[in-house]
Image (cartoon, protein in one colour):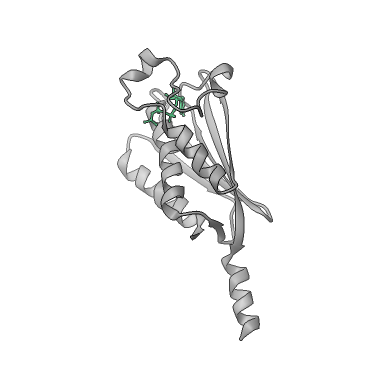
Amino acid sequence: EKTPVMRVVNQVFNDFKMIHPEFTFTLDSDVYSNPIVQIYRNHLEQVLIILLDNAVKYSTKRKEIHLSAAEDAHTVQIAIQDFGEGISEEDVKKVFNRFYRVDKARSRDKGGNGLGLSIAQRLIEGYHGKISLESSVGYGSIFRITLPIVKDDNEEMAEKNTEA
Ligand code: ATP
């Protein structure tokens, strides 16, 4: 399935804004074309939901979430940043593992199984993309996704025009 990434990003972003009015959500996009990625729309939605859900869940004090998007010739990059509790260097290596949860006692009351990030990683890598994490305890986290662009709408239009 060919999915217009930014349409999905905008939709999920707006959903979260509605569901969590106590949070300030900002979106900063440097994407001016309409990049198309080979991914099931549902799968892309699911990954964004996992990352945004976590950002909400693990930001107890500063309720601010920043989403940014950029593109180059071959890829589209999406970053989700929170200013929550953050993750230690040691745990950054482990949070993508199945069932891994930082500080089980603390996160038990937040629900979850420690599966979200492993699912997100499996999905993104299944589509030849990459997911990475940069974090610092007490300062917050940034999750970055990179996905290969198949084509953008403008190119498809140009092709149609030359065919005609
Ligand atoms: P679920 O299975 O519902 O997703 P979960 O949130 O525990 O549960 P993951 O999404 O895989 O599972 O996250 C694994 C662990 O990584 C979490 O338990 C939490 O400790 C840590 N973590 C994930 N995202 C963040 C974040 N944005 N800020 C701080 N810690 C995080």
